Length: 145
Image 1 (tube, rainbow, N blue to C red):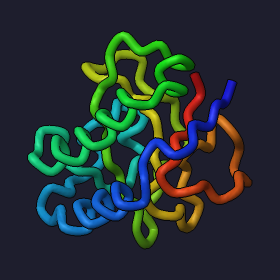
Image 2: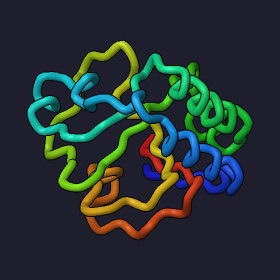
Image 3: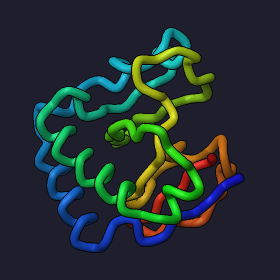
Image 4: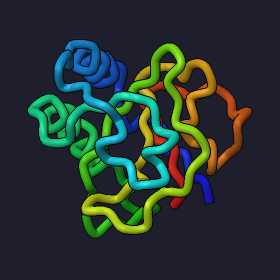
């Protein structure tokens, strides 16, 4: 079941996340750092290093918003909310067809927040709702539970 949870982040939070992401500089690393063997062969993007200060700061905003959202909590019934991973795709970057790794220290499939419009075939949500999905409202959570 695909459940859309509106208004998890307000406009000011989305702007703050965008500002933080745009200013992350050296915190952006090769996205293959967290890919399994199969994913590393097709993953061409960048992500903010999981242990970086900016990942913790921005992740706390998202986790805090999820912890305060009754619809998310009642639908997901999470025992634990892991911090999100922040990925970016520019120019010819892509994350090709792959099967997510079965074992990770942190879950590979985390809720996807959109704080920028997808460009050039960004695969966000592709496996859940197809390639031709409509543009999402910024600050909305879309994930399969």
